[in-house]
Amino acid sequence: MCGIIGIVGSRPVAPRILEGLERLEYRGYDSAGMATVSGDGIGLRRTAGRVETLKRLVAGSPLSGQLGIGHTRWATHGKVTLCNTHPHVVGQIAVVHNGIIENFEELRRTLEPRNLRYRSQTDSEIVAHLLYLELLDDPDPERAMRSVLERLQGAFSLVIMNADQPDMLMVARRSSPLVAGFGEDEMFVGSDARALVHLTRRLVYLEDGDWAVVRRESIELHDASHRPVERAVRHSEVQDEKPDPGEFPHFMAKEIHEQPEAVTYTLHRYVEPAGGELKFPEFPFDARDVPRMSIVAAGTSYYAGMVARYWFERLARLSIDVDIASEFRYRDPVLAPGGAVLAISQSGESIDTLMALREARAGGQHVLSLVNMAESTIERESDVTLHTAAGPEYSVASTKAFTTQLVVLACLAVSWGLQRGTLEAAEASVALDALARVRAGLAGILADTGCWDECVGQLARARDIIYLGRGSNYPIALEGALKLKEITYIHAEGFGAGEMKHGPIALIEPGTPVVVVAPHDKWFDKTASNVAEARSRGARIALISDRTGIEKLAGAATWTLPLPDSHALTAPILATAHVQMLAYRTAVTLGTDVDRPKNLAKTVTVE
Ligand code: F6R
Image (cartoon, rainbow, N blue to C red; front, top):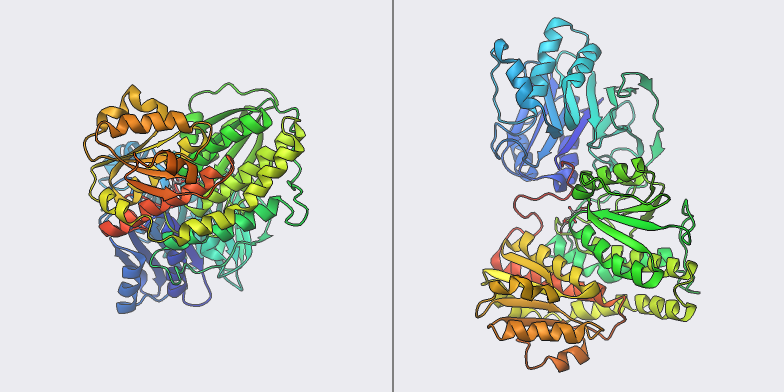
C-alpha cells in the first residue's frame, strides 16, 4: 500500500525518484507524485494517474534539485484526485506517507482555531500542517519531528522534506515498513529494498517506532522513546530486477507460465534432487513435541494455509488452526503452550499477517514464516523463515507464489510426518516423487492452450460463477473464485461442494457456470453427487479432473479441463493452473487491466 521514496543526493534526484516509483508501483497505482527542492524552493509534480503519466509530466516540465521525495498512492482516505495525491505541501514542508493516521480528524478538530487551509481529504496532509506549525514555534527540526510523532496515532511510514533544510530528510516508521540505503555521499529511503537495490545494497531497516534524520553522509536513528540507536547495516541480497513481462502480454501470464520452473527451484531448496533427502533449517522446537500450529495469512496465502491443514493433519497428525490474519489478531485466540505459528505471505509485508505474528509471539508461540520476498518485515520478525523461490511477483493476482507455497508446505508436512512417526518412509518417498513430477504436470496443463476457450466465453458473460471442491481441493475452489473476481470483477464464490445444498445452491439458475475441482480421489463420489444436484438445476459444469474423473462425469460436464493422474498431495497444485488460466483468459476476454485490477494493490500494509 503506497510506495514511498526519498533521496538526499549529491546530484539531481528526479530521474532516480521516478525509477524508484516505477519499482514501487505494485504497492499502489491510484496516483503518483514527487517533489524536489532546488534554489526555487519546492517543485511539485503530481498526477491522478500512473507513474508513466508522472514521467511524461516531469519530462515536459523537469524538476531539478538534489533532494526529493516521491509517492505512489493506494487511496485510503480521500478519493483518487489530484489534490489527494502525495506529496502534500504546506509552506516549506512536503510529506509523503504510507499507512493511516487514525486520529487525523481529531487532530484537525484540535487545530480548528488556527484556521488552516486543507487542500486534500487525506489523513496524511495533517502531518505537513503539524510540522509546519511546530517549526513556527521552535525551528529545531528534530524537536519538531519528535513532537509531531507524539501526536500521531495509527500506522505510518513518513518521509518529510523541508525546503529550508535542503541537506536532509526526516523519516519515521510505525508498523509500516521503511528502509534506508547508503550511497556514495548520498542517502536513500524507501518502502522496501526493491525500491533501492538498484541504487545501493547497503541497507538499514528501521525498526518499529524508529525515526531518523537522514543526511547525505549519515543517518541519525532514534527509537520510539527518542533515544539514539544504531541499527545493523546489511548487504541486501534482494534481486534487482526491473519489472518486465518479456514476451507475455501481462505479468500474470508470465508468472503463471513460470510456475513449472518456480516449483522446481522451490522443491530443490527443500529436497535434495539427487538423493531425495529433505533439508530444512533448524526449528526452535522438536517437531515431535509441538502440540499445535496456527497458520495465519491473508487472501491467496490463506488458501495455501488451508490446503496445508489437510496435509499436516493427515501426514503429521498435527493439530492445525488456520486463520485469516486480520481475524486472528482480534479474536483473542487460545494458544497452546509450546505451540507454533506459521505466517504465510508472498510479500512478507502484509500488515494483518505481521500483526497476527506479533500477537502469537506475545502469546508465547514459536514464530515461523513462509515468505517469497527475502528480507521482508515478517522474515525479520520470525524465529525461522522458509522461502519460496518464486522470484519477484508483479501481477497483483498472486499465482506462482501460491503454488510454490504449496510445494514448501507439502515438503514440511512430509518432513514432520517422518519425524513424528506418523508417516512411513515408503509413503513419504511416493509423495516426494509426486512433487518432483509437478513441474511436468504444470507444463503439460499450460501447454494445452485451447482447453479453456469455450468455457471462458461463457464465464465472461456470466453474472455469478460458483466454484466447488472438497478436501484439499476446497481451498482451490476458493482460490479460483478469488482469482476470477479480483481480475474480472464478476461475482464468484467458492464453496465446499458438500455445503452447496445448505444454501448456496439457491444461486444456481439455468446456465450458471459451476467450476468443479474434483480429481478422482476419496472425495470424488460425494462431489459427483453435488455436481448432479447442480446440473439438475440447469448449471453448466466446468470439470477439472483427471482421466478417471472425466470419464465418470462425462455426461454431466459441459467443459472438461484435464489434469494428469496425480497424487493427493499434488492434485491441488496442478488444479490451480486451471483456475488461474480460467481467471486470466476471462479477464483478457473482458479487456480488464489484468495486472493492476481496480481498487487493489500488491502489498497490503494497512489494516
Ligand atoms: C490475491 C492476492 C491477495 C494476497 C494477499 C496476501 O491474488 O494476491 O489476496 O494473497 O493480499 O498477500 P501476501 O501473501 O503478500 O501476504
